[in-house]
Image 1 (cartoon, rainbow, N blue to C red):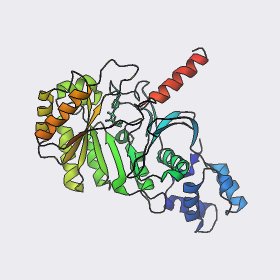
Image 2 (cartoon, protein in one colour):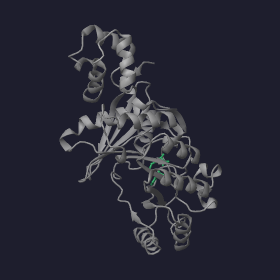
Image 3 (cartoon, rainbow, N blue to C red):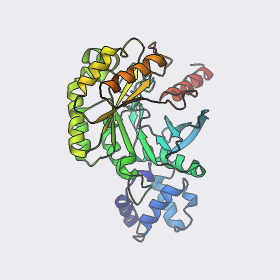
Image 4 (tube, rainbow, N blue to C red):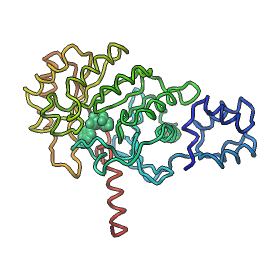
Length: 349
Ligand code: SAH
């Protein structure tokens, strides 16, 4: 299959340009066009012969929009189709202090967390850096009149550190001054916690925000909801966050889904506090977003607020996250799953 041009860095574009026998400055021109347009036909200042050369070898558009839903709070959930026919989701999140985009990095997910819709149909494949970047490029063009996009969060479907190479390449592309130029500090990577990859990430130059999907403070409880807990202990994962902080000086984010009667008691709060002792972090409490295939229940608003207050009293920085877009298939993967299921029904499968 042909690669999208958005897969390439400026130096790689320079190689493509040289191979095609074109002038050097064409590489920077191409980079600008990749950001500005999604069709070769709009690259009007390039020689026709060069456009034909590019068309033969590459694709201009990594993704096409299949459908979208807009939530009452202004969040827009996009369903995109890749050139291979796979479906992925991305979300535009409007904020007064700067809009953000949430991207997917894999088709499906291999991590198998029981509460998560993205892994419901298993893992299919990694997205390339350009396929990840193209989600942002598309949305940025769409929301120009809404104040653009300041922040990027890798919190869509898939596990960024399980697609390590393309994630690192994507971070380089999205923060490149020659490209869309998002500040490194405005990039967040969310992970279920792969300690060896966390160590590689800061060594490879990532100094954005690292979020850990912790969700339980003991191995016993975490194993009940996250398959990855069979492989790494919470201590191993938290220790890797300590090294991340020591090397980057960046406060980390602990994501903690509140599941009614499972992880939202005072004892859980104390356990969490002890586990995180001395780590520079903020705890993001997320009331569970119920998915079609899982019978866990969210904590009540009251228990969520109490849990948060207990953490604050214990000296932890914690807030309950306002969930955006939840009236339109809020949890990652739900829009895709519903589309796939309804198409299967239509086709009688
Ligand atoms: N794959 C990444 C990002 C996942 S989505 C990761 O593993 O971190 C961002 C956050 O939402 C994660 O903390 C994830 O665990 C959480 N999440 C997943 N399904 C959810 C659901 N049904 N309700 C609430 N949060 C959920």
